[in-house]
Image 1 (cartoon, protein in one colour):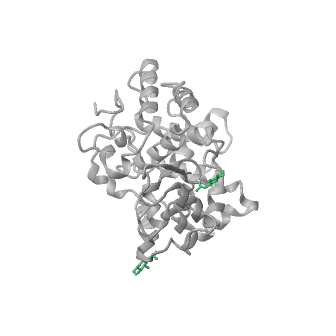
Image 2: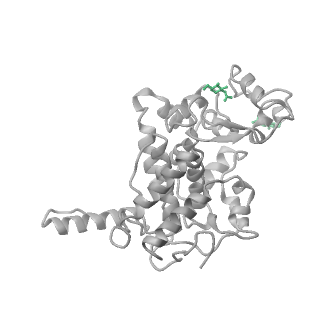
Length: 323
Ligand SMILES: *[C@@H]1O[C@H](CO)[C@@H](O)[C@H](O)[C@H]1NC(C)=O
Ligand SMILES: *[C@@H]1O[C@H](CO)[C@@H](O)[C@H](O)[C@H]1NC(C)=O
């Protein structure tokens, strides 16, 4: 389907249709341009102001969006409060940034009541977080609606740092995401931290060998052991991208090549033959900038996983509760 230039109006309508069809999921660029023109700028200024006082909200919001999309689709089901909702599931217990979404929602309800979904706020906030950490800016198609189901038991869909590469690939494939998408999206670990409790098993008696995980750079191992002593404080935070944990760049992949991945699942991107070529590609100087542009594309794809649009779902009044 092409767009011949007849009149500018027809051309742009046609272009908008092609864009919608290409995404195929019913989200579209500028969904709120008529109904709430300031929607995106309100989200952006809210994320900016929280980031200024707490830069950890950037990796927090990116991770929250990812965890939302893998469970019931990108429908803000992660935000629901309750005794056995998604946010109470093990992998979600340390998510942060809820206050940023709530703050944006309050302002949006004042500006345009009942119009902007929490699912869109989260998708936009994830993009804004990447921009704030010097990453790429991409256009986020909007028009998601909020889900009405949030169950902790569904969180088993989430990839885990203990999963084998085959299991991880299966979990991504179940969401329509291929191996390149997996490597690219895990590259989101270029910002943020993890805690000793999630990787110290690699440092001392890995797999009952009496030694450390052999994939760790021997020069890096003593640093990790110093930060995470045996029987030390498991909650201590360590940057996932050594030396560049606050900057959204491709150095995360260089660290993997050098045996300086922190999570076992991250380091496996280099040791597994199916994912290594993508890591190599992002490490290569020539394509050094391609990680950021590929990340934007992979995010648009992930942000459209199982979205609810049209008359499905609802527009929540408060992001933490179903209407
Ligand atoms: C861990 O040990 C088991 C059993 O000895 C072995 O099959 C497996 O390959 C080991 N895993 C790693 C990652 O070394
Ligand atoms: C990572 O890099 C920094 C240098 O920025 C260094 O001081 C730190 O100890 C390194 N190691 C770990 C495990 O974070």
